[in-house]
Structure formats: structure tokens, C-alpha cells
Image: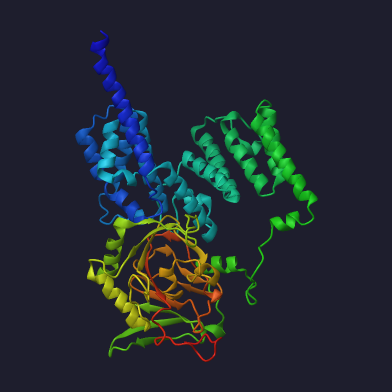
Length: 557
């Protein structure tokens, strides 16, 4: 009998092992998708193929899988009349629902050991493009960026209303999840806002169903169903120095459940922090500090405040500065080869060039980049890392790319700027194109494109011999429905993305000195998608194209 049942046992064990192996392999190679709109778009367009693959090859007897597939199917059917997926993929709340459907489907398939569903997903998507819960967390952080930058309420986000565009609203479970992510990522003010929204939804549900779940926080009644959310709120009050409110909640929690150590531990932490703030003479002042450093003499705003104001589209430039700006046809060395230029700032020079790309050329850059996109990082040689302040994926495309469009565009940058863009392995006059696809709340916090001298000298010789980044030329490959501007806080300049246009500025003065005032930022994408292509021009080979000035301090071009 032992030998007769051995094959059955072995098949069972191998089945479990196979499912676990597939799951762990997926966990190891799966990469985030929330930071790339093109990969989000791909997820949206292949759902019908996934449904077909599952219906053709899988027996969906599991009720949980049936329920998730029904949600998938209804969502796909509701969009049958939409010809372009970008019409809805550009809305972040819609993206949340789609990511959640994918995460739920795979999780249910793993829990029920349904290898056929897992295989169908990996067959259509590949193992690296299946969303995970980390994508939902990343989505939340992108939403927090949008809320903080554009002053959008949690209520509007939850209702699906962003910048006049609507989507399916979030439910109570979604709101609670977002509140928890806000707390864990130290967005405490937003955590309070999302918790309050969850509580108000609970109360509204009680009224609608006329069957209350015994939770009415406004009347001070606290019960076990909401203890975890209220503890979260107490923690957020503590971290935002609203100690009396935190203590009030914790006292009621302790009264309701005196045996719960988590409540008493949080009470101790709250009172300890409250005591520290009281004993420090500068404690509260420090908590409310706007930060040190540069403050604009005219607007009285810090760099951070200037950055935020410009991203929100506020006009901060005075009339005197505006009077120096102009538009013209920029002449080149080639007769009759001119470009439409809008001068955004004179000293140092910042310009916007219009209609410098065709739609086909913009698409060619995106197509060339898509297969090799990876998460953008920041930092110096050997110290590059992923940060929340740069939410995007990118890749590099060299001039010798099989598509001749790439080399043609590199040469066009040379015609427009008058600077050499010759790319080669050693002593290059310019970098390869860096093509960037911004994700949910995609942004790049204030930074400079050049490297500080102390940092630059640590580069390998192959980089040092090309010199520092002299200038930046950035193509806009898409229009952006809302958000996504490029802003220069010191100059009070904001450049809104315009498809097939490009923005150009110098990073170094004619003397070769770095210009710290070229600090700039990519504002968070609110709606739509944002693709750019950067061409950084190096010092090498520019000796006669942009010679040094007699006046080493001049910023004139």
C-alpha cells in the first residue's frame, strides 16, 4: 500500500513545491510598476488577454477567483467604447483600482494554490510586471506627494475627483489602507485626514443601513471595531504635537480595554514626547520652523515655498523681470534653419523651443526606451539609490541606436544650441539621451544637473575627461494634462510641458564656474503622463563654440 500511494503523495508534494517555487520566483524578480506610466498602460491593455488565457485554460471553481475575475471583466467591459487607454490610465484613482485587482487576483491564486491562474498571468505579463502590494504602497506615496504639492483633500481623492476628472471612488477598506500607509511613511497630517475620512464613512454607513456597528467617535463611544484606526489617529496627533487630543483618545481606549498593552505603551510615548517639548525652550518653535537658508527678498518665501508655489502655477515674477523676456526665431549656422524660441530668463539663459520634434520622432524615443526602463536613482559614483523624491523610470539611448532618428535628434540639439553633441566612448561632448517616464505622482525634487567640483573629481577618468555638464537640453515627448512643470525657484520661472517642445539652460557660467541658482525641479504629475528626453552637453569640445568671457563673473550669453 505504501508504494501504491507514493506517486499520489509525490504528485501532491511536487504540486505544492511548484506553486511555492513559482510564487517565490515571482517575488524575487517582480519589479515595481507604479513608477512608470507606460508599464501601467500595458497592464490596462492586456486584461482582455489575461481573461482569455484564464477562461481557455483554467477551471475557475474557486469562488474568490470567480469574484475577482468578475470585477476584472466588468471593468474591461465598461471601457469597451474607449479607443485609447491613456484616457483613463492617466487618472491615478483609476490606476489604484486596477493595481488592486491585479494584486488581489494573484494573491487569491497563490492562497488557493491555483497554478493555472498564476501561469496565465506570467504568460501574458511576464514575471517582472505582475503588481504587488508594494505597488499599492508606492501609489499611496505618490498620492501623498500630489496632495502635499497641490493642496488636494483626501475627500476629493477618495471621491475620484482630481482636477475636474472623475473616476470610481475609493471604499472604506481602501481609505483605511491609505491611512495606514500615510502613518508608516510619516505623513502624519495626511494620516489624520484619511483616518477622519474613514470614520465619517463608517458613520454614514450606519445612517444608510440604519444598523450601526456601535462606533460613533463624535459622541466619544469607542469600541473594538475601530480601535486600530483610533490608535493610528492618536499616534498621528502625537507626531504632530497635538498631545491633548492624542491623550484624550488614548484615555478612552485604555478605559475600554485596560488590558491592552499597546494603548498604555503609546500613552507613555505620547506623554514622554510632550514632556520633552515642554522642557525644551525652543522645542515648539523648532516644530513649527519653516527651515533655514535662502529666503527670497521680494516674496519672503523659502526655496521650498517657491518650489511649491511655482508647481501650483503661481506667477511670482515681477514686471521688471518680465519686461526683459521676448520671443524670436533662433537662427542657426545653417541658412533658413530657424527655431521658435521663448526666452524665459535672460541671465543666466533659459529658453523654451517649440516644434523641435515631430510626433513620430517623440514616439520613436519612447519606443526605443520602453524595453529597458528601470527605476531612476540619485547620488554620486558608487552611491546611487532609489528615493521617493524621484518617482520615474528611465534608460539611456546612444546615438548609434539602430533607429537613425536618435542620431538625427542629437544633431538637431547641436544645430539649435550651437554646442557640440558628439557622443563617443572617450572624450564625449555630450551624454547619450536619458529618456524618462514619470509614474504616479512622478516628480524630481529640487536638484542641479552639474556635479559639485568635490564630487566631480571622484568620477572615473572616462567621465572626468569629458568635463562637467555644461548645459541641459530637455525634450518634452508628451503633453501633461495637469502638473509636471519644470520650475526654477531662484529665478521664479515655471515651464509647463508642451509636447514636441524643449527647454534649454546653461548649468555652468562661461568661466566654467557652477551656477547654484540653476536649482530646478520636476513637479509631480497630477493627471496624464509625462515623458522627457534629456541631452546633457559636456565641457569637452566646446572651447570655440562657447569660449570663456573676459569677465569671469558674467552670466551673459
